[in-house]
Image 1: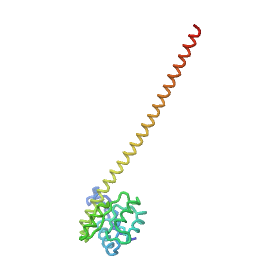
Image 2: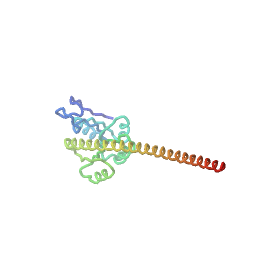
Image 3: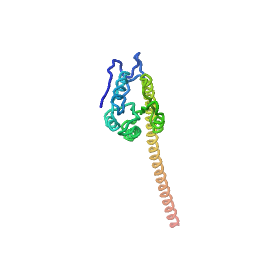
Image 4: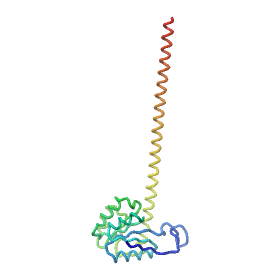
Length: 207
């Protein structure tokens, strides 16, 4: 596995003027491409754009990397052979190793059908090679921002769902307590009525 990380004096998460800037932060990328030259060129150019880039020569290596390294975006070349691109994406999704990351497919300019197939299969975006790296940088940051928003929404939804579940449990316990109180009341009324009937019987016997 290769890893490209550019040293920078600018703090992660700050823009050029020092202001907080989510879109300008360093992204953690994983590039999956069986072509060694393509991997190296992509990694070097993206590292110069202030990204940390890990490289995988096939889908199996990518899965191993994800066990120990969190990523924001995975770029997968549609030309993978050992483990095809869509199969690689499916295994990554099913593994749960990168639940919040976005997956971007790399396609050739003449292969629009593959791009359509990738998007239908669940890819978050696709990019066409050869790259305009400034445009690629903007696309990746946009995808990362969108993935973060979706992740935040998912977390809020999960928290709300948990609160609803807890409330339902509390209401269930309250209903059970109320039902038990009603049973106790019914038993008390029955006991009082039985006692009243017994007193009435004793009074009638004395008369």
